[in-house]
Length: 283
Image (tube, rainbow, N blue to C red; front, side, top):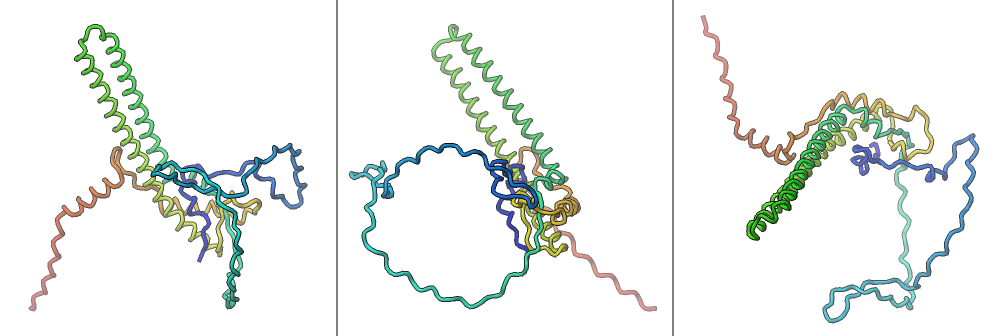
């Protein structure tokens, strides 16, 4: 069975935020037959701060006060009991020899037609949301300016009513924009989750076809040869089996879309059972 070391961080890589090693973080390895880079000149390091020898534990102040105070724990005086005996374990089966493959998830996602679809669709919805928010904010400013100009013409009751109306509109719009933003984010996650699920299976199939039992992120490997890389084969198969994904309509959350589909399936009339063919008449 192929061991995957990437699914936990795969979704982050799908949205293009997979961390890349910086040059300052890559000084602990070297390329064979190449001179090792010279170590940077050492800088004077500040003296470490003095730390109390005892650990600090939160304590609740007496009298029911919920404020926590840091009190030092007393040092351990009693010796520990003897450690338990750890028996030897029976010899188990040795793992197979590692046949390693590497891949670049960001490169795969940039070449994935389904990921391109998600990026284009979700990007358009986010731009529309930002445009609507800017228009609404401009309307707030106009209303505030009009209220300031008419302040001397309005009675205190009328002024409070206008201010209350403006505040209600701002509160309602902020709530609606938060809800719309949440729906857009959920739609993006729904599309990427389909790609993630399929990508894991495609990587497994490609690795099995190459006899590989260990697949690593390219960013986790300091040096490899091109024959280890299966990114192109993964992209080819991913675009074949998943050229596009299902994205909820604009303004509809994935949960609402699934619920609507279930209700539509229940409302459809059941197909009439097929009638048995009549037996031919004997002559």
